[in-house]
Length: 459
Image (cartoon, rainbow, N blue to C red; front, side, top):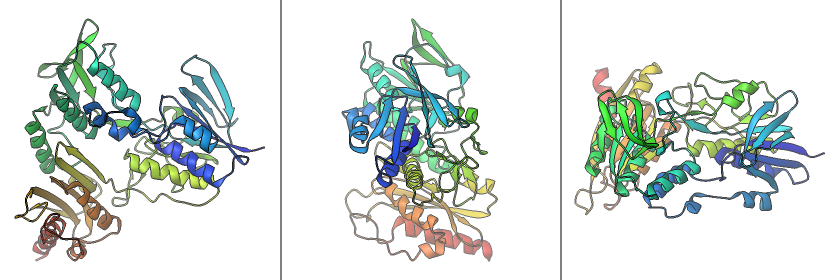
């Protein structure tokens, strides 16, 4: 009898694992059944804000492979609109409900791939029957928001609650659609993924787009009128709204795993080893936004939900399920986004992360330009480096600037990944031409400044 792999979750991690396992084990050797509760497989959730804005005209452009491709070309039994409700590890079977007709199916497994992703944080005040309130996690969520924005009467006032990546990107999308936009953030300013001095640059750019930012302002409730959301209630009064988007972050989707007895780590996500195996449970694997992983700089377990990690982790799990050997060696938290033309990048530890991990460090900010100062289109760029004291090892970096800014973070990510010091970095042989960089690249300028700061402290 062929071995059977059950995959729970049909997006990045789950389908990457299934595809890699299929490549290594023939159709007669491995049967693959995938359960996905939504309407789509293998899509780019990161592209949803650009579909909302109209920059991406068609949601089909966000779908890498539809279920029929997996069924036809990869011999997988992909069951859409099926939600797994029970995992029985003792009997090695799952129970799933058909969300269309309410029917129930029970399937055995030899290997189980748990890839349920993450779910939006939704505080009690956000639980409402009022229409016009949206989370933003799946393509189904994006479709629901698009339908609301296109329906009559068309919304004119948007309130985005939360200033992380999704909140900032959706706020920009709403501005591009012609709505008035208020972003409400419980912290001092949006983009807490960078330090406050860098986040202020992002906030300034958002205000320049016409987005109203209400910082240090907790939300306490929602108001509705005739079944539609009408306002967001805060400690300082109500903010009128025809549409509300929750951008309060996500948490690992682990309720099913926890009920089945899969171990959770200190972050609340599933514990896995470097091969993406769940410890102590043979044949049980997990990957993607539902798992925690090692931060290569701090050495601590972290939950960093990014599509890049999910795809890599799923690939590693699938290679191992397929009988070969692969490991996932951790993350450093590299991420980029934009606010209109302003680009934001970060990697490694922020100042507060470095303090929490017990590092002594220096941090420096270097101002430069994205191109030679005399070349047309030259714009400001701000680079921040955090370096360990006294070794000079790079601990983290952030960049805010215009074109050519965000992808420079990759240079710093490679340096960080390989344990380079800021002194090492001053000698990096980076590309130069006036249309692309000053003769001293902003990365090199920041590294030199960090070296000087470390030397001054050691005198």
